[in-house]
Image 1 (cartoon, helix red, strand yellow):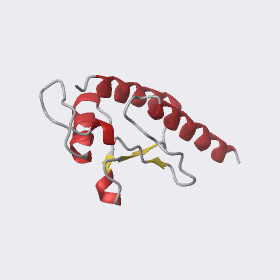
Image 2 (cartoon, rainbow, N blue to C red):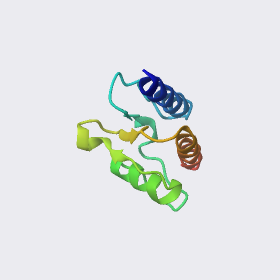
Image 3 (cartoon, rainbow, N blue to C red):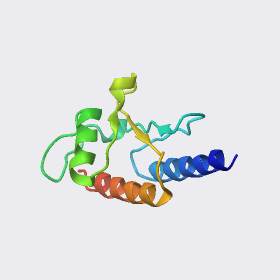
Image 4 (cartoon, rainbow, N blue to C red):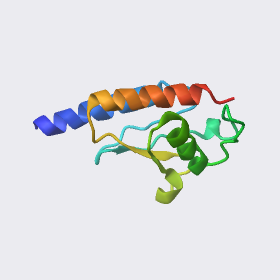
Length: 109
């Protein structure tokens, strides 16, 4: 019960933070320890370096390069444009990752 409560708290943290980012939609998963935020409104945006985010693989690459956050592109799971993010780590690391994602997304034009 203790571990389940800890993972639920982490899940709720990540879902809440990602849903607060303009252009992201993160449904609450019922199981596992992954979230699948989608971002159709961000497709076509441009990074500060001039690269167009034209699919979910480009978004994952941008977040890895600029925010130092690892994710898996949603197309691998039949979900596009989306990505898979694990919340199987500490709340501190999840908060930092969400901060980085929020900053990176905010820099898209």
